[in-house]
Structures are given as structure tokens and as C-alpha cells.
Image 1 (cartoon, rainbow, N blue to C red):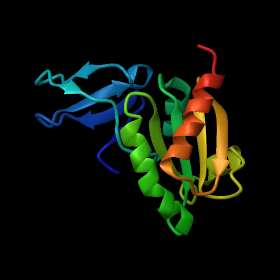
Image 2: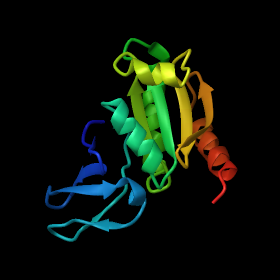
Image 3: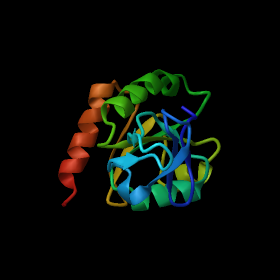
Image 4: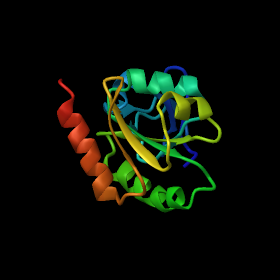
Length: 157
């Protein structure tokens, strides 16, 4: 975690070939994109994105063309640390189909309050700007992927 950043329009990723920073617009985050400098194809994010501000969270969830899997967590939480590698697997296996983001509820308490997070870890899936499903407690990657599948089937296209 940590090589991806957000700005007010999208996810900023560095090209693996030349290092140039490129923006993947939220509305097209799952689309094929080429580097502005070297024209190498840039893949959709394949690792969890750490959310730094509530405004970033709101923009991403509202505008993302992909379902957004949100991990509400805190650094002191043992089960949260146990689920982190599972979320890494999900992010990698769901590249181009879903985005995985991490919300530290100690730093962004307003998000925890707004969404009624009572226990951590809690995994929520947002699609079309709305929360579609959630589950509390540490879960293995296949169970998290099942939540994503159920959520995307529930959202009309």
C-alpha cells in the first residue's frame, strides 16, 4: 500500500515502464489507459488504496466506474491486521473489476460515524455511489469476493 494516490479527479498511478505519474479518472478507472509519456498500457489499481480524507472517499465512491470495496479498520486492531493480506489478494485478483480502499476509522472518524461502523474490521461494498452490502469481522479473500459478486448482481446496470 502507498504507491497509489487520489486527487479530486482520479487515482494517480506511476507507469511501471517510465515512472510518469498518470491519472485514472474515477469514471474510467476500469478502462484500458496508456501512459501519457511512453504509451505503455497502465493497469487498473491492483492494491488497496489508503483513503486520506473524507472528501477523497466521497468523490471516489460517487464517481467510480467500478464497485468500491471499503475496509474500515484501525492500526491497533488485531483482526484488521489479519484481514489486510486477504484484502491485498482481493485487490490483485479483482484488478479492473473492483477497487479496494482502506479507511482508518481512527483518522477518519466522521466516516465511521456517518456509516454507522460499530465494529472493525467491517467490509462494505459500494456500487453506483451507494452502499450495497457490508459484513463485519475478519474474512478470507474468497468470502470478500463473494460479497463483491453479490453486490454487483444487486445493482441494476
